[in-house]
Length: 398
Image (tube, rainbow, N blue to C red; front, side):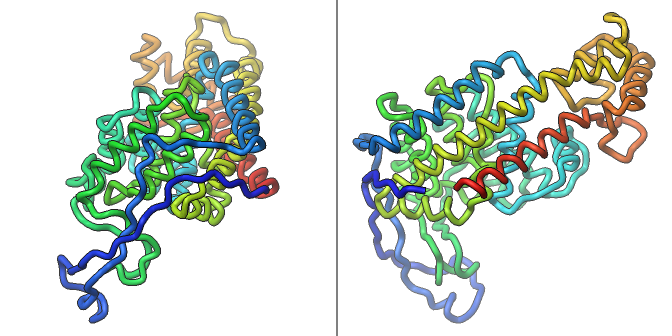
C-alpha cells in the first residue's frame, strides 16, 4: 500500500507538573512529578492538499458508499439494521469488547447478557444517534451519555468532558511509561470547539474530513472512556451530514479491527503531522466494507421470497404472512412486538411464530419460555458473515 503525505499541523509537547490524586502503585508512581502532555494543533481552518492518487482513491470510496446507500439505503430496511449493528460490533471489538451475535442481540432487546454484549448494544445506540441528526457538541455529549449510561464506574462522567488528566498505556496509577498523554482537561473545550468547526466544513474531501476528524478526536481524548467508539461514530456522522449516506452506516470498523496495528500507526502518523496514512486506510477500508455490504444487500433482498417458499406461500392476510412481512423490516422481535405492530392476538402470533420456527426461519435467542426473543437465523448469520468477509478481504488487501 502506497504511503501518502498529506501535511497537517503537528501536535506540540509541553511538560506539566503531576501529582497523584489518590495514593497507589509503586514508589515510582507516587513520586512521579512531571509529565509531557500532547497539545494537538487547531485544525478548523487547515488547508488540505491530497495527492492526485489519494484524492482519486477517496472519491472511489465515496462512490462505493453512495451507490450502496442510493440502491438499498431506503428500500432495504434489514440492511440498515444489519450494517448499523455490524459497525457497532466491530467498533467495540477494537476496544477489546467481544461477544457472540446472539448475546449481542439479546442485549439489544434488554435481556440479560454478558458485559461485552451490553457494551456493544449501547454502542449501537450511540452510533445511531450520531448518524441520524446534526453533528454538534450536544449530539456528541448525548451519544457519550448513551454509551456509558450503564457503567457504574463512569456514569457520573457520561456526556461530560473529562475533569482530570488521562493517559494511554503505562502504569494504572500515574502517566509513568504512558504511550500517549492527551492535552490537559482545561484545553479540551476549546479543542473540541475547533474540531466541531472542522467537522462542519463542506469545502474538503469527505473521506479525508471524516478520517481527520476521528484522528483529532482521538488526539484530544475528551472523555474518560469511550473515546474510540464515539470518535468512529463521529466519522460516520460526517458521512451522513455531507449527504454521502442517508439510510445506512457502512461497517468501516469491521475492516479497521483486522488491521489494528496499522490503524493505530496511522493515528500516530497524524499526530506527527501526516494525515496521508489515515486517509488512505479510511478510503480503502470504506471500499471493502461498501462492496461486501452490496453482496449482503442482494442476499437480504432475496430472503423474503425464500421464506415464503419455505412456508408454502401463505395467504396474504394470514398471521404467518403478516409476521413474515414484519420480519423483513425487523428481524429480531418478541411476540409483544407483533401484537402491538400487527394487531394480532397473541394466540395467532404464537401459531405463526411456531410455523416459522418449524420451517427453520426463526430461532429462539434465549432459554426462557416466556417473553422469548425471536431472530431470523438467516439475517443473523449474514451479519456474522459480513464481518468475516470484510475481515478476510482486509487482511488480504491491506
